[in-house]
Length: 402
Length: 211
Image 1 (cartoon, each protein chain N blue to C red):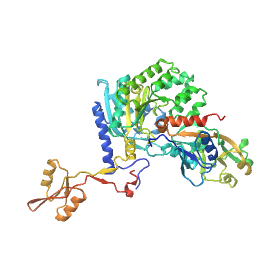
Image 2: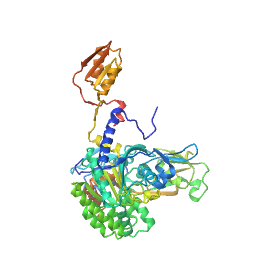
Image 3: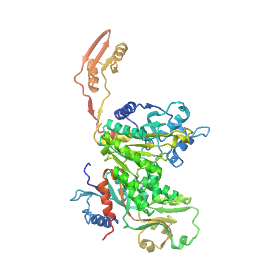
């Protein structure tokens, strides 16, 4: 009786914590006027391949239906939403603001913490909006969301895919070399980058900073696209300053995201003590055109489990809140229904229990009232003060919940 | 973990002497001998972890260490998500495909149809053969791999060679060189940002050309 690798169950107290985070994320999406959508967990394989590029299909759980149509489980939500918008929402006035909180599936050879085969993503897509206002909206929404869940010291690194291209061409790399260098840049492999014998590559792959870093890149970035991107990033930093986010936002010229559809602005959010990023996003103007709908778009997403890990490591949420029950009712469907209609949470007890057993059950579950309806009489018992929070017992059954 | 003092993962064994010497040259007070200690805190607040070489990447990937020193061969085998910032040059060795001299595979003798290869470096060996579409039966071993072709367990071995002495002693020869390895300075990708000043300063001191 074992689960496959890389997936997990959520017990009631664990799921309650996860739902709490999801509610907070949902509230932030709502405040920014994003509407939640849902797409199927399975897609046609060719749709995922078109969105993600051939290389990323290695990440897919794939299978055939009985007519041999190749199907895949979605490894992320941006491609399914791009498909949905290009097929069913073309008439809707842009910009569209869409959000999701949804499970996605990735085939990792060796699943591990922060790299599970089933994970939950909470994210937002701003479709049909070009330019810095839209880029800034995604970044600031992400900062607000992490603030909302209690990670107020989370930091955010920003970059632009066009700046990376500007640096690579400014360093004089041929397109083939540039592709290779970009892969090395993505994992900050300075050893590999040194082999190109272009000191600027290594220098920018480890350069982080704010306005001064942007100024330093103006020397090497000579393409109009990369220069425009540097200007935009500079403005973005100023806007972050005005919101008081300044010290938390840094330019990192080696920041590139895994998926190949990003075309411009990029960011990642992280906290110091967790070794992987918690959220990230960027501009993907080339994605919707792959589905025949010529609109730009930008979006971001957070890994809900990663957020939970970060919070748990800080000792937040280590206590569980028990499901609140207001009243224990014995003996009458009618009384129980009346209590529920009054808005109370009702737990139903067997009619064969004596008063003592009922009080004991109420105590065990912190239920303040017991209503006993037997033989035409209704009696109510009060049970002592209730405790809202209980420590989680360290039993083998929840060790792996860590 | 808010202070900017670093935690450094160090490999015990063959790489330790050179790694310790390089860190000392960079101004970190690393002990000459580890003994049975697992961890040490130096006078300047740096925490040193003394690990099995193959465990270094995991400590760095999960951020239990900010950075570490580890052989490239170990990085191939563990495939952990760490940023490789510098080739430190020491600990040179080669990963090779080797066989018995009398089998003449190194002179182009045809390989057996049902090829058996013994190795401690399963991942690297798998990649090497997969890239050549060669069907092989890999036999993962944990020590003395050079014995396996002598007693007929394997036709070839994939193993690390530093000086070549072990191969010569058993009358084995290199059939093909797979890759070269040296010690690398690796960092956790997120910690590189969070402790940027401390880590880039250390990188600079580690890679400074010795006077």
